[in-house]
Image (cartoon, rainbow, N blue to C red; front, side, top):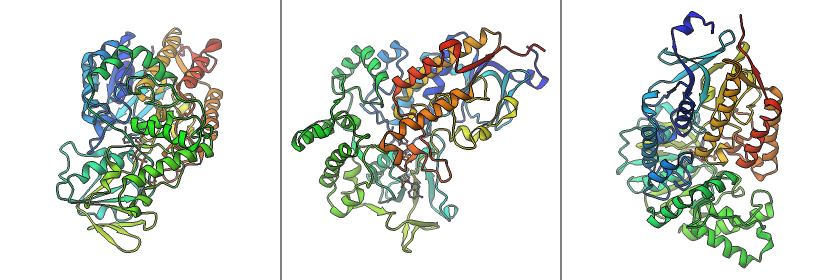
Amino acid sequence: MKQSQSIQASRQVDAIVVGAGFGGLQALHHLREQGLTAHLVEAGSDLGGTWYWNKYPGARVDIESLEYSYAFSEEIQQEWSWSERYSPRKDVFDYLNFVADKLDLRGHMQFDTRIVSATFSDEDGVWTLTSEAGETFVARHVFWALGFLSQSYIPDIPGRDTFKGTLVHTSRWPDEGIDLAGKRVGCVGVGATGVQFVPEVAKVAGHLSVFQRTPNWCLPQRNEPMREDYERFVKENYAEIRKQEHEQRGAGHVLFDYEISTANTRSPLDYSEEERNAIYEHYWKKGAIHITRGFFGLILDEGANDTLRAFWEKQIRDTVKDPETAEKLIPDFPPLTRRPCGEYGYYEAYNRDNVELIDCKANPIASICPEGVRLEDGTVVELDVLAFATGFDAGAGALRQIAISGRDGLTLSEAWSEGIRTHLGMMVDGFPNMYVLGGAQSPAAHFSPPLLVVYQTKLALRLMEAADALGDGRVEVTPEAVDGWTRHVSEVMEKTMVAKSGSWWMSANVPGKPRQPVAYAGGFAAYRDWAEKSLDDGFAAYRLTAPATT
Ligand code: NAP
């Protein structure tokens, strides 16, 4: 291969992986397993991805850990034991460290290395990645495993820099923690993060002010220490459980208390009110997302959805003692059209004397001042600590921070000037030998990320193999395949009630972002079928080219 001098001076591998979370770790492993040279770089000071960064009080997984884990190694899934049904952040972090040691990955990873640019050389057919510190890496293939929810979003509220206390985004909670004991703490945002944060902080803070703009529908997780016999049941049945998981539309539906559950295929409207509520009650008691297994059509049909809504409203009113607060906590949008939040004592927290709910729809945040938060009516809520649980620029937010330039100098910003377009959320035309794991337009937000990224990596490896058969060749997706997938992602979402929602699921949480579904909602099985078909007819969805011979 003829190469320019600057490229010869850089570290060279077959593939570079960026990001050391669930996506990156397994990609590094699978690439090395194929006998390729691979190197992983990560901006953080350790591995873990989401489970490294999100150190806020209360952070934990809301899919059962026995499901939210890798399935590709029987040895790993049998050997590792989870201590709780829904693991706290630290347990997931420890698990990923265990995996890295088990697969001998540590020697191929480099931390504290933030990639700021990536440029494809038409001449050499390689990518050059440059870090913030100016270090360069050259690879024929690049895997972006940056996380679906990793680019923090803090709203641009006037006076944000004037606050004299501690201001923090929950996903950048410091390693050493923040002493909240007896303090006046404010929490802006009540998505999945805020809902986990509030009950934990309420236990220690002197006073907690929760700034709520849009209440969310929250599901009791009913976490508990891992029961030995339950763990044994799952480990003995893992093959069937993983098979079922891959067929589900969403994540975390399969395990159901010593059962591999199958969903009801009938509408709630097929039942009397009494029968229907008994079914809801049954699933509610099991906790978490199982409520969606009770009936079919809950996000397709408004009448069906209304029955769930009525049941759920009653649960909130029954739990929160102050009727006025309970009414403020009841959402004004249909359940399941935004991501439901898993709760661990969230509603009960509002029964405490030190917790106050501030309704920012009625009285919005006007500015931040040195003392705290000023509301539109002039009230100043005085605070020592102000936490923003305001979410993420989901999907491609982190990827967009990197100056990526592909074939013929085309930049990713240019390719996406009118919105994100991908094939399977993985590849973009004009960007050869580049693969995104768990990215925008993939099923990531609606499926189990640890399973998705493994399938995607194996798909990429099949494409790489085809390109390699041409002798260091290139693989690029066709514009037709990209347009077809992008259209399909929107069409699938349009059939659901989610399409009308205003949350990050529709890219609606970050001002100025084009409104489009951030992820594919058709289910993993349909995704996999589409991906497999793209390989038919001699890889019809891709262009495989041999390297230039000059
Ligand atoms: P989010 O769902 O986007 O919630 C952000 C919150 O900030 C919303 O309540 C939003 O209100 C509020 N907000 C934004 N700007 C505001 C402003 N200017 N004034 C007042 N409020 C404002 O973010 P998230 O809670 O971090 O969750 C994001 C996703 O991460 C979740 O849906 C989930 O997929 C994942 N997550 C998972 C877990 C888990 O258990 N495994 C835990 C945490 C997060 P509006 O709704 O009115 O915009």
